[in-house]
Image 1 (cartoon, rainbow, N blue to C red):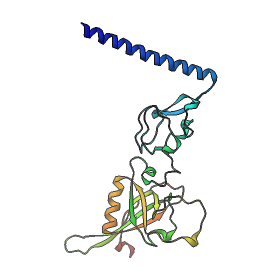
Image 2: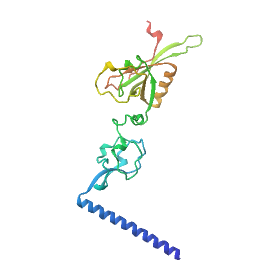
Image 3: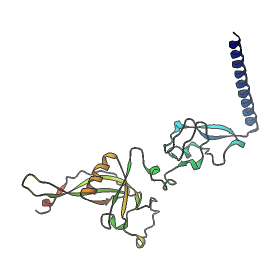
Image 4: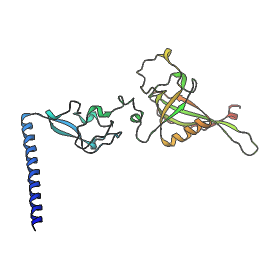
Length: 241
């Protein structure tokens, strides 16, 4: 009976303490609101794991006393929606500008540039297959593959060229991930040795297979062209009529 009484008294004391803290914080909040020292800042409404694209449901605007606001805190949800968390952001934590990465400020980390469901695949190129050094990050390309197919029994192999994938984004040329600024300085263009593309897992398989067993050729698309074309594969004997 005595233990129960002690437990009940401790519970009452805990509730009283919690109530006192709550009332103190509410009074403090009212004090700041009256004085106009509250500012709305963006905080995390849930835990946001690192390398997660931030959505509206993950954040909220919260009134915070001006003296407790970090000078790097975001004050507009539009600044962070769609960006990627560089590190874990805990519930209730102020979202800081240097903890999120956007399209323009994430070029030092390739994984931030990838959209959900995409993969980065690097292929080797030369002056011809890599478009003479004129390809730039952000361009869109089609990839042609040429390889040999074994014919029927008693027949020779025959070469075939086909569109492996279409309308894929160039993530990097060698180690350069920064898109072209629009200036055309061909004198300084040097042939790339590697090109990294943003592809789906389904596109990655034929791309890697042909890069290992055949040859690849990149075809640059017009800047605004997103249309896919349907063309049959072509064989060597079709070139002679």
